[in-house]
Image (cartoon, rainbow, N blue to C red; front, side, top):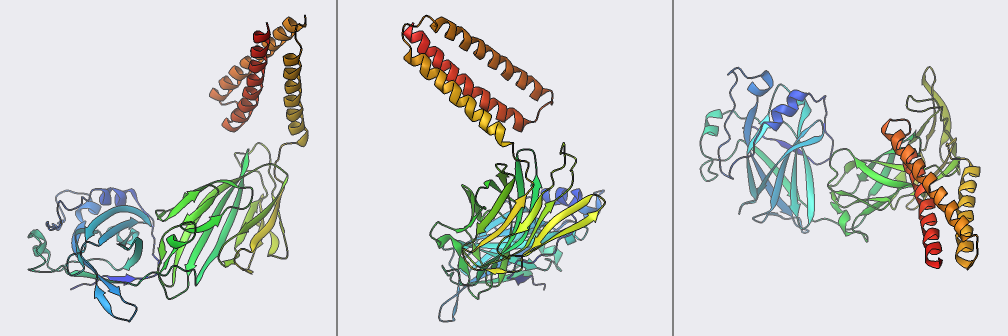
Length: 444
């Protein structure tokens, strides 16, 4: 009789994923009912090797509840249990069951495949008192007596060969033992903004299960650096992460001595040629590696040579090279940061628009506003018709310019970012002119 051992930390071994694996797992269907049969798929029949070797197994998940006095009780009936199949860390399929009177959940179609087993891993998720408890499993389900899989399953007559035993402990609502590791912060410049790829690790070094959903804002908040925008989440297992405004919130639970990988991406608009990074976490944080390229990339019209500088003695800046014309500035921060102590450094060489362009745009807006004010306050002036004609000429010129921009966008002569920026400027001027024309028409 084989037993699948549970692993309470979140470590997993990943291998390369092939299209055969995806097709094989996608071909698996969930059982039609709770107590159906889980047929063993025999080899042969002209099937491809990865399908011919596919097997299904029965697995019993037993759930217990640890009590504060040290006792262990059986989980109540109806507790939701999810058995998750992952391929190279990515969720492929979930099987859902509920515990019976003895705290058991039975899964009758859990797959294994020796052809691609190195890329397959398993998880069990248990929902209890509003908290999802995740357990990573180590091991592969196996079945010695394959003949019984052809029979209808009845737990009163026999139990599955594969057993998984899980014990849930009451969750704590505090943050004792929680910290964040800034793994890497990669800076990627584009035409309109600086793209940041931020990889972090959330740690629970305590002996308690920690429920982050009870934090004051409904989760543990990770803010972007001041001035950043549009955070997005990437990677697997993001069900317990939420984006709200310019922050990401972790709303799930963490098992004792476990870690959680978090990858998020956000942007920093180009406003100045230097950006002062300041990012404070609500829990202790360990520094990481900041990486900025200093060479021309294929998508750039001209080189964008970023440079880094330390602030307050945090870390050390070094220039490194990974090949011909492949130079980077890096800062490695080893300092342990206290809660709400910001990670700080400076990014230079940003391709911010020239200040005279911003001043010219502002002057243009003020000039048009002053012109509208004059038109609205001069009554009975014989030059009203001239002013109206001038505004209509300007209106037609702007409409033609907008049409040319749209045509250039369709033909790929300008980027969508430039089109959007120019469109907003032209539209703002058109709105001002139309309002001025309306005032003139009313007075006429």
